[in-house]
Image 1: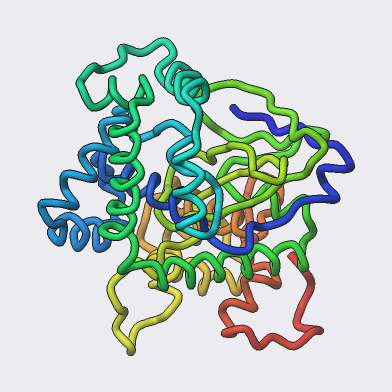
Image 2: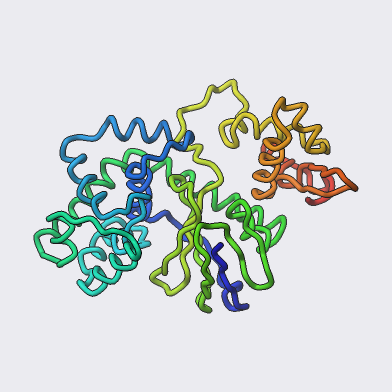
Length: 334
């Protein structure tokens, strides 16, 4: 469980990074490939990427992947949160040996660190190895992400717009709690599920949010160049990375998945968990999980009525079902 501790100053300075950061996304892409993720929503991108790698690109990916842990996570000096690729690569080239050593020690603390000539040369900040590292990062971005970059930017902008709508409809508290399933507030702490327990003071400089269409794990944190805490979280949908949908199909199925889209349509009218499961033809546990995910996105509200739990669309959910054209007086807010 990760607890983010906010002050009033922090809450007054919550913002979204205006653009995705190329090297952060490249690092997350390599994490997905290196860890052998089988996330279905990334299968199209992963398959096209792996089969399209040239020998040169494979070598670059292998060099950079050699600095990653088995779970795909790597040192933060590889992926500065800078929107311009050239500036980000320049930033990597100026990383000090002290920072390199500290980052690698932090990353591998309590783990067996692999050897190898390439890794050793980077750790010792040997100039030829470091120049090759920067060139390899550039090649990784070109091979793994550049063909997808317009679509990634489109998805990034869509997620930011969606979270802005949630904040407009339900407030900052609900928007932040909806960034990750299971997130919840405890006083001034936002608690995020995760494998390790830690409390992090946001620090008074605010919070910068950065959605990622590639990362499907727990939120990642680092410091933004402006001093704020940077939180990288999974975007609501990897839609831009999926194959082009059937034009006659329900567009919500591409956005949310077929069963979840059906659930949202059904919840235009209130349903109990049991009733929703029966209509969808799934187990009660599966129906509850779908409702929980829709609730985390601000699309569904849940209330307990005696022994039953009843779910229904929020105003935001109805807005999505209506294709963005919902009268201002259309029902109560969720």
